[in-house]
Amino acid sequence: MDGLADSLGSEISSRVTFIAESGVVLGDSEVPLEDVPEMDNHGDRREFRVALGAGLGVSRRYSTTLETSMMYVAVPYEINGSIGVVRVSMPLTEVDRIIGRMRTIVLLATFIGLLVAILMTAIASHLMSGALRTLVDYSKKLAEGGRGGRLVVTSRDEVGGLAGSINLLGEELENVVDELATERNHLEGVLEAIDDGVLAIDGNQVVTLANSAVLELLGQSRPLVGKTLLETIQVPALYDAVGMVDGGTPVTIEFVLPGMTPTHVLAHITSHGGGGGRVIVLRDVTEIRKLENARRDFFANASHELRTPVGIIQANAETLERGALEDSAKAGQFIDAITRNSARLSALINDLLQISRIEAGKYHFEMKTTPVRPSVDSALNALANLAGSKDISMTTDVPEDLAVFADENALEDVLFNLVDNAVKYTGDGGRVSISAKQVDDLVLIEVEDNGTGIAPDERDRIFERFYRIDKGRSREMGGTGLGLSIVKHLVTAMNGEVSVRTATPKGSIFTITLKA
Ligand code: ADP
Image (cartoon, rainbow, N blue to C red; front, side, top):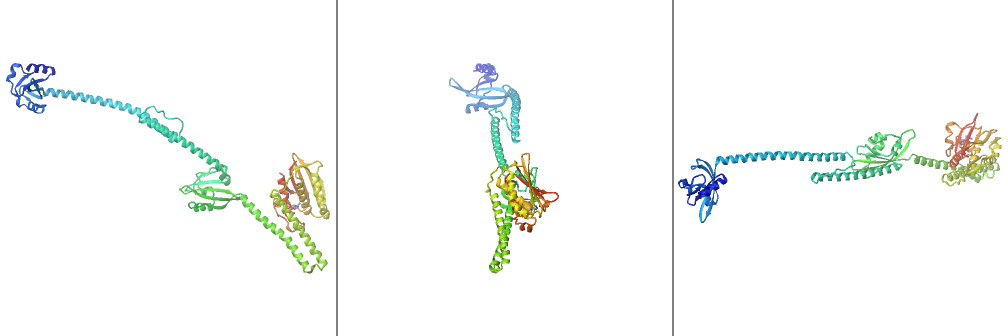
């Protein structure tokens, strides 16, 4: 056993001891064979007892044999039926040395491991932060509305996944932006296409949208977005009406925009959005109101004009009925009044009918090249008696071959009205002359008289319906106040123009300009 202990001991560089079950040492690698029998009985050694009982005994203690602190590890053995314990021991200084070495190795390994870990972390974080920086830059570009380009996804890790998601986000964002842009273009197109002004304001009454019709209506050239409503339209009534719009009930008001030519505006205000925003639709109703007024005036004037002759006829007829018929001298006067007023009534009705036919588009214009001379002659012939009764001389200067692009009947009506007026408003012994000439592709026909003339401020107004400078005189002459209005309508319908100026030394010159 001692030989086995020696060879095992030198093999593992430790002391190996074989101890019999009785505690007698059978062999020890550190003790020569001859000294083994003298060794103490090891039956009381702790590791020996524990090994026999539990199978593994470990103990540290001072070795009297070797005179040094030792560490013992013992396990039981069985060889050829005899049981014992084999114990390995080592001086504690050696164990400590090994532990110290192990600690150094572990520390070194830890340090190197840490170093490698730090290095790898640095490399990884460098790579990672580079990739993240690219993501951040791209995201910033997206947020600023930039487009174009996609992130190149190289890795399959989380960063790669994030890049893929950001790419999708970018794509979605571009689609949404494109859709919004298309919608905005649609809206702008629609807003610009409508004639009404459209103005949107937010809850603070600041303009957020205005189409060009609003700018036109307000006579503004600079954009209105960002200005307040009161800065935009200085109409307190509109401001109040905007405040009155409650919930879904729209408010409509009409106001007059002050200016060189006051504009009548109809405003329809509705609320939009939850933040007190409003949409104001502005419509220019100046022309409509003007037409309504004109129509109202026309009916009032027409009724008034018709009532007078009808009243006179009625009164005279009643007087005759009540006995005046018996008085032949007076009867003549009454009958004469009835005849004159009937004629006036008839002239009025004819003129009114003619105006309404022209305005309703029922006057049939047959536009063709029409010689001027026959129309002038026909007007002169029709008025020869009236002119003769006032001793008015009528002269013409119209080239034989001069022709104009017009409707023959309309041209005759126009000339008749103008010559009729010239004779009516020229004193006895006066002069009326009609001349015509071609200037480039236009034909100018002038009717001149040396009568009362027309004051400059009356020149535009005489073409209005029922407008007469001297009502009494006009009535006396059988005028209706509609002649020049008919002239203007007819000439305009034939794409021509009519104007008046003062003749020298006195009188008026009416000029019609038509295409040759
Ligand atoms: P009326 O039937 O009263 O003549 P018109 O429309 O023909 O109506 O003319 C309108 C008014 O213009 C006349 O009442 C008259 O005061 C004025 N006027 C028209 N022609 C002449 C003219 N040649 N000279 C002076 N005043 C004229």
